[in-house]
Image (cartoon, rainbow, N blue to C red; front, side, top):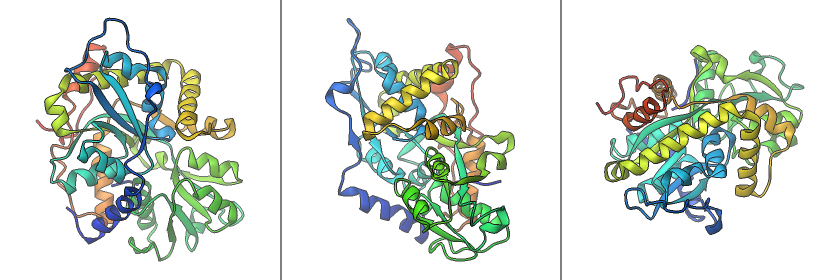
Length: 367
């Protein structure tokens, strides 16, 4: 089984570099003023707030946020409280934005959520919902790598030192009986930390032989002639593992529970709409990606990427704990105490009201 992700020397290195790099360009790309869906006539502010600031990444594993924004679902549930948005390229910058109050709620991967929790001694955030499972693959150059055993001795890219996919790949390497220094990436396999935006070019140029990456990067590599050697979902029980969670700043949760509940209600409604309208949802997600980045995904990338992601309200809490254990095993994290990282009270309230099955925190909740 693979995985993803207090603080020891390695964690400090892994967290500090992305923060320093991204500080110069701010926390994220802010939404345009005319982007927000229109407020319904007679709508009232939620919890008396002028706005709720929502963060997410511009990739398909954050489909709930993409579709919910594009469809105006968050704005609908927030009433006259304006839904404002910021997009991010890396987890550490989103955690920094949450801690500083630049955003209130965010869609994020498990490793940065774990790191944010442990670095703050459990005081900065809580995971309040799930969003997506799967969508991570090992894609290789079929001319250089024809089997899993051929990965030994090759250069394989991951998005960032200590990020969710990096930890998963390091754990998989260890399961093969191979040795790699987690910090340097050197060993029986050379792990190359490469931003998802540049990995397809590196793959095309031959400077890496493959990559363990999320969608849509994986499908971009396939479009460049790559072959899927392993789908990470096959390594997990039931083929499910958390790839995206919803987090909130603890102070915001305490002070504005109605606003948090409104966002969660919009998330549940969006996920239900995605399940009922997969083709329309895929188009909506791609339209928002185009609005955020200036470029839509071509069908040859969008279609397979979309198929490999499972949208879910369930945070799959047990898999988050396993991912943390894998980070510890890789030497990137001291054994964390994750008790209290989840507060699923409002999500389960929403699910119950919608007639949906409630979800479990695997013993890591606040209660």
